[in-house]
Image (cartoon, rainbow, N blue to C red):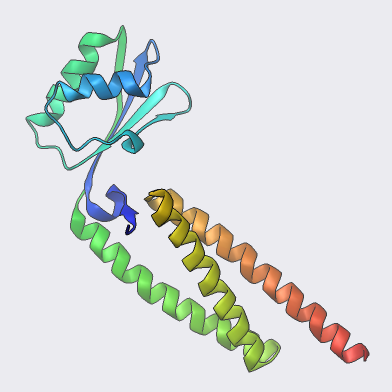
Length: 181
């Protein structure tokens, strides 16, 4: 199905509002359909801290943004704009390009470190395990159509950090057992 990229990579507008009484996501979606913005998806409307609502859309033009504000302001007792961020697609492209190089250099560095500390084959196995864990996580995100954004990237890095830590501990224990025999 492909990976569903978030606005961090594709570009778009992130709006953060404080609304009272707290609405449901369905209610906000219905209200926003009145603004003629069709690019809003359910996964791009979410609660933040229980009462604030985050709306991620395609890049909104200057005439479109006040329409969103007006519709929400008319339907809620308390309406407060907390944050408006616009991210261009060129930033996302540049971030993706740099990420590829970072991943490549990190894998080479890990291979070198584990080769020096243990053996070359152990290094290859550890790097393969990392690649496997990363690809498996991305495959799950693709199948479940989970949006890949900066929070997802942080989660991936956490998974990979634990993976390499476990691998090095296992390799160290294997070396200890091998030296005992």
